[in-house]
Amino acid sequence: MRTVAVVGTGLIGTSAALALTGRGLTVHLEDADPDAARTAASLGAGTTEPPVEPVDLAIVAVPPALVGKVLADCQRRGLARHYTDVASVKAGPRGEVTGLGCDTVHYIGGHPMAGREQSGPLAARADLFEGRPWVLTPTPDTDTETLNAALELVALCGAMPVVMDAAAHDRAVALVSHAPQLLSSLVAARLEHADETAVRLSGQGVRDVTRIAASDPRMWLDILSANAAVVADVLDEVATDLGAAVSALRSLAAGDEAGRQAGVAGIEAVMRRGNQGQARIPGKHGAPPTRYETVTVAIGDQPGELGRLFGEVARAGVNIEDVAIDHAAGQRVGLVQLSVAPAAARQLEATLRAHGWDVRD
Image 1: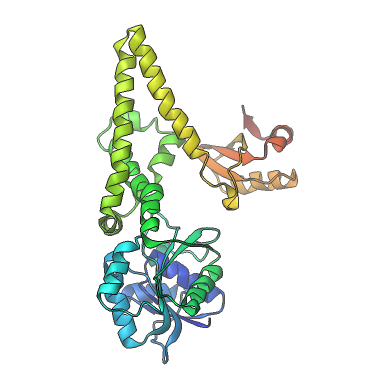
Image 2: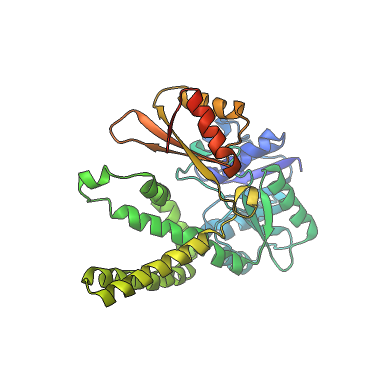
């Protein structure tokens, strides 16, 4: 593959373009908003000049509701030899693609499982897809050359290909992406009119749960509208569990022994189910989840401190598997939580203390 057209220069389209130009491909950028395309080009994502001949692959990077219409226009213009899209819902767009009479031999659906809370070309990153799953949903008549072009795209972006049926994809993303987005927003909405004192008590737990609540509602309306029924099914199941948890808490609050026992059993059951579900989430590089030890270090909120800490850990010969920072309210101090292999945790704590770091138990 040498030439690519990216139609739609938002976060995903521009990130793919940046990854491809970084690999030496010629990328042509299009957008209904010319300013967005020019912004992407100014970031080094490609050129706004149209190609003089069909490119090897066109990436349709528009909302799900527009995939069919845009793909039909691209094929009418003979923009590319092969086509894919990056919409986060697959069954609906495929139905529209078929209904519009598009060429499905040279088209394959796609969805990179990566994103950010920010949107638009300025939020794009060349490494956005590295190590992330990229779902491909061939039509019944997608040819081998088109599949191979899509696989090459995934490899060039550093992602991992996963071939799925379109309907199965939509059920999966409803469970692991779309419903969690709404649940995060629902939790964050409780904070909108909460007492300021309560909000100031927020720690890493509520930050983790509400992080994606900062996402653009307009973008998510497009996504959720295209997968509404399946997401509603997932939330129905969550609502059933939520109702059971509320009943268990009411029993705990009632005060009598029988109610307390019933409440304890109910809450423990849902939390243990949560333990089991969380344990199934793939770990580093898609491997089975691994339990790490956490080493907590207090550092000053000033330039260079985090880099100095990481350098110290590297000199100790310890690999940081994950990291989180919990900022102390009203103080210029952060608690850095380093996830490391269990066998290395105690030695790392001793080494850091010996070099003057404030290691917390």
